Amino acid sequence: MQLSGNWNYPTQYQMGAGRIGSLAANAFAFGIKSPLVVTDSSIISLSFFQKIVTELGKNGLKTAVFSEIKPNPTGKNIDDGVAAYRAGQHDAVIAIGGGSALDAGKTIALVCGQGRSLWDFVDEGDNWARVQPDLVPPIIAVPTTAGTGSEVGRASVILDEKAHTKRIIFHPKMMPELVIADPELTVGLPSKLTAATGIDALAHNLEAYCAPSYHPMAVGIAVEGMRLIKDWLPLAVADGSDIEARSHMLVASSMGATAFQRGLGGIHALAHPLGAIYDAHHGLLNAILMPYVLVANRSKIEGIITDLTRSLGFADIGFDSFLDWVLALRQDLAIPNSLAEIGISDQDVEKIGEMAEADPTAATNPIRFAAADYTVILRASIAGKLQR
Image (cartoon, rainbow, N blue to C red; front, side, top):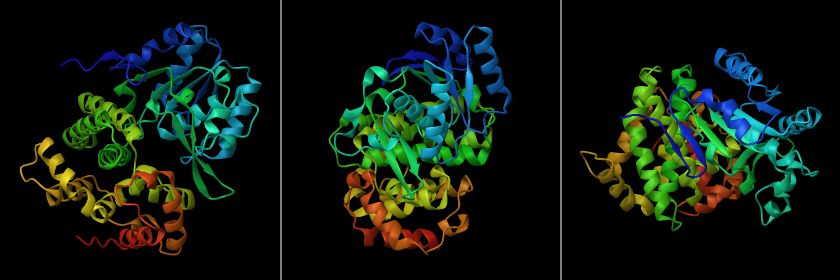
């Protein structure tokens, strides 16, 4: 099977090895002449990135690079990026990297022409209506990890450092006009990051599948996304040069972000405040939290998880079989069993429980947990004690 194609769902999507070579031509097709290339400090020195920027210049595009982005991008990162965009009189954003760079790039594009504070566009009420859509420049997204799926999302997660909380910035214009998904750009990703980002993609598909909202299309996408992850994530981690595995994981990541318009849940409700307070990797947090939240939700999701094991071709059908698979997958990928193993203590569990209850993703968890419930889940995940 040839793993390449041009799709138009949920946006223009060019998939396949070597497709990055069309970036300049695509930029010109959108009328772009002077893009701000947004990436992060871990990408900027890599040879493939330098080649991309050089090729853009050779093709007549006046580019500048902004890379002052933390793994959990902050409001200051966005403000600095907006200042760079305006100073360079750019006309588009090309975001290249993992979720941090993509979230930052999309948010810089949203804010740069508005004359308002970033926080005026937090996803609350009708704040999104404050945006003047005609002032949002084109966005091209080039993912280099297979995890967040931010390349096909209409939102970004940005850390409000003053409030020590993550906030969701949303507007339909944040959806990139074009995604170039080239698996060759993910080959150099270390195995630990391949594992953590891959289970992040699993978390998106899984929580979308379990969300109580009515959206059958998203359910179908989520099931296929999980099937791809089940079949290909272990291979991508074992052999980072496996282009077939890398290709399937890129698509599964985009599928997760497409499906989660149905909703997310308790995994993300806890991961967001934990990431804000401890500056921990989002995908790794999701990977550690997953079985604890699954068990907490069991009374509401046991039936649909049983259906899922049939769809995924499990030999043994049922909730316990799926949970055993999650635990075995984490072990095979060297994911820690507890939050304590990555330096998270029980010092702030009540505060984090309250933040989790208030997180927007908590609204579509199968059970509407209170802060005290999230505290119980958190204590178990810190101690590594899974009560089946």
